[in-house]
Image 1: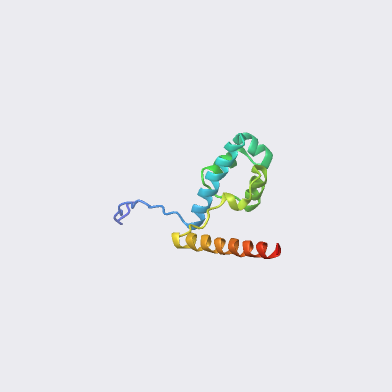
Image 2: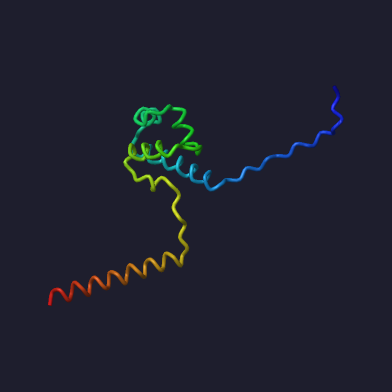
Length: 118
């Protein structure tokens, strides 16, 4: 049977990172960095986490990870789970504000300390 419909040229799919993709990408990169810092092989991490080697490779390449496994991996690497996730980028103004707040707090603590010695 002949198809009378003309073929449309194939369009290339552009892949854009979703927020979840960015999280899993950063998570995988940081898992690999932390694993290497403590000299654990992918095989050992898989064994300790009770997951397959392919799963470790998939996670480190930025693919999705179950939350339960993410917690397990963080515990094995002895780091807080939050440290394996993307952090909010701070603007220069945010940084300056935090420094000023810290300076004010330190100044207040110094005054309290001085007054307690009187």
